[in-house]
Amino acid sequence: MLTVEELTVDIQSSRILRNITFDVGARELVCLIGRNGAGKTTTLRTIMGYLKPVSGTVSFKGARLAGVFTHAIATRGIGFSPEESAIFADLTVAENIEMATWTRRSTRSAAERVARAYEVFPRLRSYASRGGGQLSGGERKMLSIARALALDPELLLLDEPFEGLSPVVVPSITEGIAAITKLERSVLLAESNIHHVPEFADRLYVIERGEIVFAGKPAEASRNPDVLRIIGGTP
Image (cartoon, rainbow, N blue to C red; front, top):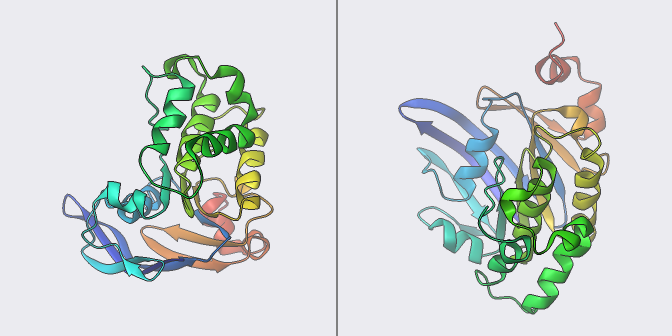
């Protein structure tokens, strides 16, 4: 579904990504794991068209995304929940979610898409009339993901969905991601903590200093001392 090939990206003359290659198949949950500054967010932002690569290609369902504007990438079926959540603080929870239904046409009605978002994160339903600025950090994460899901995308990009959250909130986010995978959506999840990788993840890539240094099953990564040194900070 998503194919990234030999992708190289510079930001302000600094090379951030170096010839990275990976893919996300239909109905897969794939995790991109790396320390802060390794290139995870740059990868997702490049896929979404915010950054222009120096070289390499990003393709979605066989069509290259080079030169495609971000809003057009969304209409093609890629939803994005950024690390900072980026919800609209002056809008209510309901308005934030409904806004996504205006962005992309779908065979599902707006009401169906909104209902599905609430099914994934039922806590948000009781906060529907609450302003986005009144939510906790965990609730903002839920709303950001729910809004991306209301787009009715085929692929969801989740950037650090567990970052900065209280341990008591993490299970709710994990359960929401599990519910999304049961909807047969593909998910690319960027995460800095390997212990937050859901046990139901299909595959895992480790990125270090802008390069993919491991590709395989999560269980294989947890047994790989080189991966654990990078992600776990062991000597």
